[in-house]
Structure formats: C-alpha cells, structure tokens
Image 1 (spheres, rainbow, N blue to C red):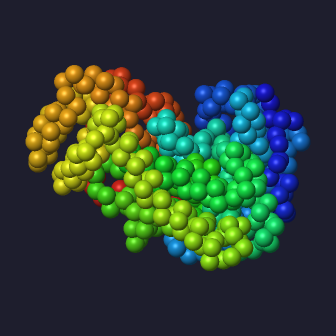
Image 2 (image 1 turned 135 degrees about the vertical axis):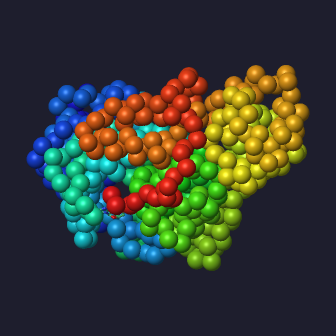
Image 3 (image 1 turned 90 degrees about the horizontal axis):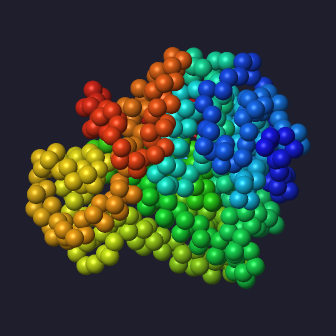
Amino acid sequence: MSLDGNLDASYTALPEAFYTKMSPKPVSKPQMVKWNEELAERLGIEREGVLEFLAGNSFPEGAQPIAQAYAGHQFGNFTMLGDGRAILLGEWQNRSGQKVDIQLKGAGRTPYSRGGDGRAALGPMLREYIISEAMHGLGIPTTRSLAVVSTGEPVYRETTLPGAVLTRIASSHIRVGTFEYAGRFCSETDLMDLADYSINRHYPELAGQPDKYVRFFHAVVERQAKLLAKWVSVGFIHGVMNTDNMTISGETIDYGPCAFLDAYKPMTVFSSIDIQGRYAYANQPPIAAWNLARFAEAMLPLFNEVPAEAVKQAEDILREFPQVYRKSWLDIMYSKIGITDAKEGDEKLVEDLLGLMEQAAADYTNTFRALTMDDTAALEQMEGFESWKERWDDRIGVKGTDAARDLMRQYNPNIIPRNHLVEEALDAAGNGDYTLFNHLCDLVSNPFHYEPVDSKYTEDPPEPEEPFQTFCGT
Ligand code: AMP
Ligand code: MG
C-alpha cells in the first residue's frame, strides 16, 4: 500500500504542548541507499513512490507531520529536548492492525533543535540501521529501520560528511522524557491525557482498571526490566541511556554510541562522551531503574492524591525492578547453557562461568558459541574451564545434550555486529560500496543461523591498536 492517504495522526489529538506541526525540510539529491524489504513487506508498505516521502521532499496525502516535545535527564541532568532533527510523518496501521510510527531522523531543524542543524550523517544512520536490525534479529524489542536515504548534501561535524535520513519504525516514540516534560511543564490534565494515550496505545488491557496509572507504571517497569535482561545477555551496551532514550513501549531506541562487548569486561564503556562510565555495560540495569524513578516522579500526581501515598506506591514497584531483572536474566543465562529446568546450584554455575570469562577477558559471544557448538578447545586456555566444564557436563548430562544444544542455538548468536566489522562495512559504504554493508546486514539479521560463514564474521576480533570508541557525533 502507498503511504498516501494512509497515515493517522492520533498524537495530534493530544494537547498542543506535546508537539509542533512541522514539515520535513527538502533535500537536493535523495537516493535510497538501503531499503528493508522484509520490514516493508511485513508492514505492507510499497517501495514505489516512497523515496520523496522518506527524503522529506514531500509528505503523503493527508499526513500531519509533527516534531514531538520531550525533556529528559542527560547524564543525570534535567534538560528540555524534543525532536531536534526528527519528524514524525504519521502512524501506519500494519497488517495485524498494530499502529507504528513512521519517523524521519535527520529531516531538518525544528523548534527543538537548539544549536543543532537538524541533520544526520550517513555513517551514524547506517549504524542505527544495522544495529537495530541486529537487535530485532536477536529477538530484542526495538525500533526498526525501514530505509536510509542519502541526501546529496553535506553535514558539518568535525569534518564534512555526507548527509542522510533514516526512516525509523517504532511502536511509538513516547519516552520517559515525554512524561518528564509533561510533569514539569504541563498541567495535570495534560499529563493525564498523555498517560491515557500511552495506555490505550501500549497497554490497552489496563484502560478500564481503577488504578490504571499505577498499573501502567508497573507494566513499564516490568517491560524495561525484561528488556535490560535481554541487552545484558547478548553483551549489548546502549551507550547513552538518558531518560529521553527510554521508551514507554519497552523497545530499545536511539542507537548512537552503542556497541556489543567483545571481551567480557563488565565495566566496558565504548562511548567517547561517557567519561565517568555512567552507562558502562554492567551499570545498565541500575541506570534503567534510576530512569524509571524519574518516570515515577513525573507520574506521582496521577498515582494518589496524597503525595506520601503516591511515593510509597512508586517505591514499592521500583523495588521489584532488580528481582524482575535478575529472574529474566537468569532464565536467559540458563538457556544459554542449555538448562531448562533450573535448580539449586545452577545460578552458581552461571556465575562461575562468567567469573572465569571475566578473569580471562574471554570473548563474550564466542564463549557461548563454542559451548553451543561443542567446540571448546579454545576455551581450555581459560583458567578453571576444565573443572567448570565437568560440572556443566554432569549437570546437563549426556542424554540432555541434544535438547540442550537445540536450546542453546536459540539463545547464543552465531554472529553479532562486531565493532570492527561494522566499522569496516561503514567505511566501504561511505566510499559508495555497499557490498559489505548489505552482506553484514543479512548475516546479523539472522544471528541464530548456525550455517558456516566466512570465519572473519565469527572469529574473535583482532586485538585493537587502541581501545574501540564510539561517537555520539551523530
Ligand atoms: P540523541 O543524542 O540522539 O538522543 O539526541 C539528544 C537531543 O539532541 C535530542 O533532542 C535530539 O533531537 C537533539 N539532536 C541531536 N542531534 C541533533 C542535530 N543534528 N540537530 C538538532 N538536534 C539534534
Ligand atoms: Mg535521543
């Protein structure tokens, strides 16, 4: 189906404080450099005629494009933000009746741009494309990427770079920061409208419930705890977990300086701007809880008329976060070592393996991959591995082995978008050659295929000359 005449704008029914009506700013020479056929098909969006829309050169008939307002805590400090370079074209109903946002990232300046140019560079948009698609392939809730359009115009960062617009698909773009914005700058009725809208869109089962706002908060806390367990289980580091980069839907959003762990070092930080290591790999679950506390603060007036009661309700729910997180994480970790029927001692088996991996700075993905493939020769250099393996063999037993390995193949990726592979593919794409990028996209979109591939995609990364860094320079 064409986008013409088929986009909703339900967000514009919210009070005007939540958005600004805005058209994307046209670009001179749009070219579709990546199109996600699988996603397009799933959504039922046809490619023909879509380029001018996705470049921002025109918008679909009947669309009411907007920039959304939001605030957020960035590295712990509250600030006003908003879509400074993104335009929500509208909402699209997919084939199963679900509504998704179609957003153009890099579509020009808006009233929320502050000093920014409203644009995005090609490299970071291709990066978001590939990492978000890899996350989806890994079974992790995430916004997705429908297309990358190069603009033919330069953007000026530390150097001059080619510009691009990413088409992002999200079940919505409502963030913790959207509620913080409502809590600080809007009336209580506006806040309630936003909460009702979010409930109807993401948690419709709560709509008729008497204490729906508390339940809504509870549901978001649960979804986020489960999301974080998934991130940690695949070695994902988001890199910039500010409250504006955390959704109410429970999808991963805003792929800036994110990256996957190679060596298992829990305090790994890749982002060049994260000087203090606030968003280090192992800090992510407590940071998510911190962000959710900011969400609770914004929502307090809706929880209870008596402030002390509202605070108590919020605290009781927040206190569950570590338990929900831990349980989800352990369930995944058990599956990663082939255990379905967890019992006493299994937690220690997981912890002990991670302890050995940390001591040896073993590759996170490849340790589990080697266990899955029963090809553990390389792991034997890890001190203490042999005795751990004896315990593990005893635990899953010879009879359980086939079933265990089937399970492990569903939880331990054969392939992840490793930093050096992504950089290599982006460099080539920057020079106009998309072969590597397309190939890597295909591979990481199906991470659990245990088919033989060129070993460069699965082997441990080369020892870097300098520690790998990711940049927000987006
Ligand atoms: P992010 O780091 O992508 O989460 O962005 C944080 C805030 O900065 C958001 O309000 C963005 O809209 C805004 N922003 C990022 N890059 C730009 C840019 N090039 N122009 C205008 N606003 C931007
Ligand atoms: Mg953001």
